Length: 335
Image (cartoon, rainbow, N blue to C red; front, side, top):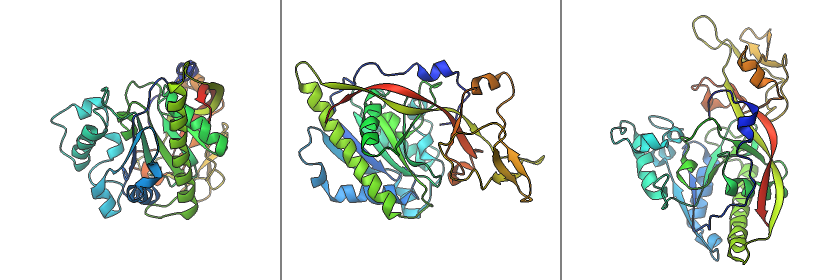
């Protein structure tokens, strides 16, 4: 999620060195946090109707539709973005009930959480689509050992899977999966709002089920005496740096769009001077420029853009996000 520029060392502080010790008992798969992200909604409905897919696991799997009002209207949200309603301070604030999403977030916290408690779900997998060309991008907290281990397994099955860490400069995050002890967002694109893309749907379904297979192997490894075996490996992580706004004129109006040469280049290296935007006259390329000092030093490393031209982020004044890339150690269960 959005935040300030981070020093490189901060992004590496959460590098894993020990396997996750959580025995997974409760897993939630959620869809419809944004009601117009149709592949996630339809997949959640499919899972609800096919509970036999989850038979035989050593843990309980529950499937839940989250923002049911926005699903009904095929809209991202009704009053506000529900995937920004799950900060602990907001869930604990009895006066924060003015929007449909704020009220629904509290209801979901009662089911999935309570956030930060021993009763919270062990793992939440939240299904999303994006209009950006991210492919499968798994969004998760920097210190979440289980989610990174799941990601390492999914990457072994599909090397195109990407891992993105939420802002390491925060102690809490407003996204729905943060309610659980462990959690991740499945962002899959590019898919237009309200569209069910068959190839994206197939891939998401396959990888979600593979995630559950990994959780079963994780529980089996913990049950052994001694626990294990654990495979030392690593995952390539994209650690959030900052969001980049569109060019704007003196009136604050958008003065440029994503440049054609930049469109669809999610997770590809972005260099100073690369054409990032095209002016509204359709004639002038506007180059990417790192932030001025003192933040420029924090952007001295190679940066990688993602969520390029995500339609929902226009209102958040975000044309794309920037990340730095590094390899994160992981101790994974062996399947």
